[in-house]
Image 1 (cartoon, rainbow, N blue to C red):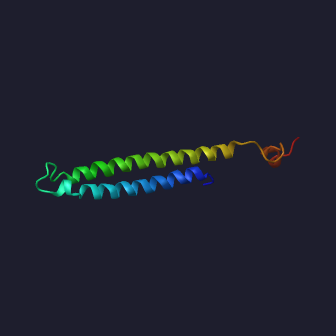
Image 2 (image 1 turned 45 degrees about the horizontal axis):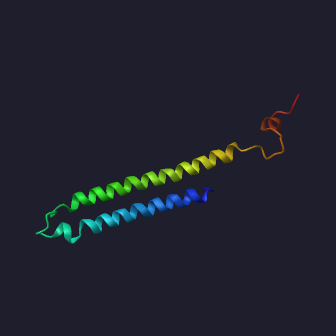
Image 3 (image 1 turned 60 degrees about the horizontal axis):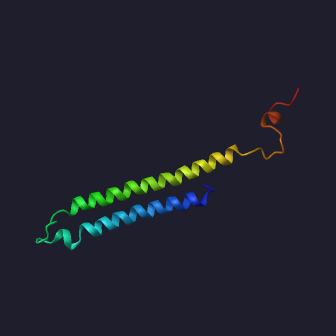
Length: 97
């Protein structure tokens, strides 16, 4: 992988996914969802699933964007002009008649 932007986006996506899972754990175990007198009592697991699931889906999308950038860079590198001074690859394999 030669593209640093693609690498940074992929690293950000991984960190974002981990941070969303940690946020979901902290949020679902907060006093709002564990206090008996709270109207949201025992709603911690659905909150965890929603926040963690949303974060993971978004992180996959960000990672996919980094992968697309990396693939496009590879395509650009492979289809750029000849660097051999105009000599075609076939000319080196089959000599001209």
